[in-house]
Image (cartoon, rainbow, N blue to C red; front, side, top):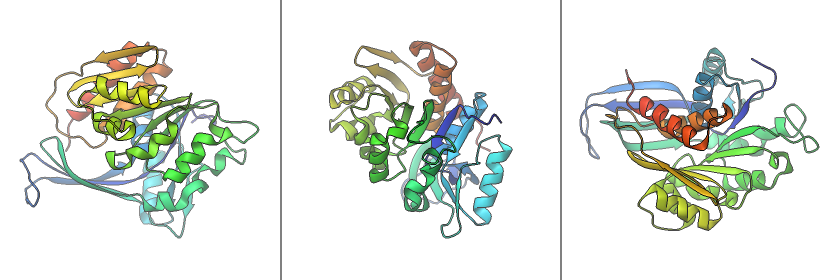
Length: 296
């Protein structure tokens, strides 16, 4: 890999444990299916798709100095991802995410990102000590940031001069963490990637469509926002324009990581010079292909 990454991916790097069934499920059901352990976490999912798009991402996160952490780092290296600046902490276990999906729908999930939260600002030291940037030489490129970081750390990032010249692309990680991103409302260099529910939580409004969610986010102070709504139209909005496009019709087979794939594909499309309209269409197509993909 090049010594200078195309983009920094900051946030959760962990093991996904995903159970999927082709049968309908309700709470308490016990159904046959498949269980897989795969590399995951929002930052890592974004980085994997960006690498697939021929970009060179560098990960900033934490893993434990344990068998799972070493295996995860080895998997990242095998995929061509930058891990030179990952924090390895012997006192913290490697994080995990567990989800159950049925017929392409999420039934339940638990995100254990306690080590990432505990590590806090230590994962950002390469941006402070000169390895990647410093207060006197801030990072000026792309950064993908996820909401698994604590509210306090996200607030520090929003005000830290090291990030002041970066092109910030931000995802909430889940509706339960969406309100952590309120600190980026009004940030002139932040693009927020959310779904309808998350748009409502961040803006404090009840929204039922991506267009309504985008309007609510702009009114709340967002400078640019992309709002998705499952199989319905998605919107890319800023104060001077609103673009809407419908995703392709597909039969969903998986859902975990779909939003991360959409975000990464959109970032890569814009990095290649695509227009906002074309980038949105590319991102929707890429996410649809992912959701409809083989889960074996």
